[in-house]
Amino acid sequence: MWGYMGDYGWGWGGMGLGMLLFWGLLIAGIVMLVKCFSGSGACGKSGSEKSALDMLKERYARGEIEREEFEQKKRDLGE
Image (cartoon, rainbow, N blue to C red; front, side, top):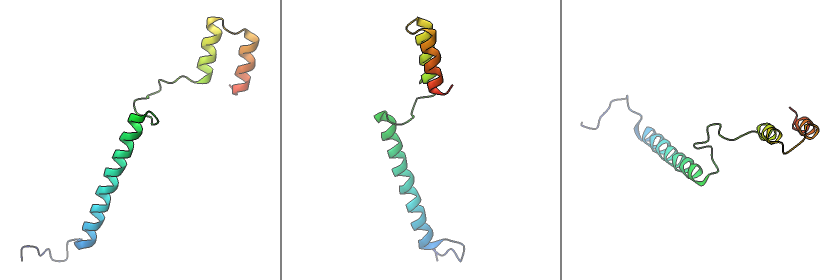
């Protein structure tokens, strides 16, 4: 009578579902960690990457490109 739960338990089906959920979450976590440490994921990159327009503005500000080239490239980017 120790293992009797009446009709309130999920039985073997619930245990199988729980095991599937556990392994799925474990595998997903490992995949996320691998992506994070391999550099292909978005781990630790909170907006630190510059957009193409930002880089273009910096080049113009440093005098590397003229105004006409800046305006043309800006139009090419769709900004």
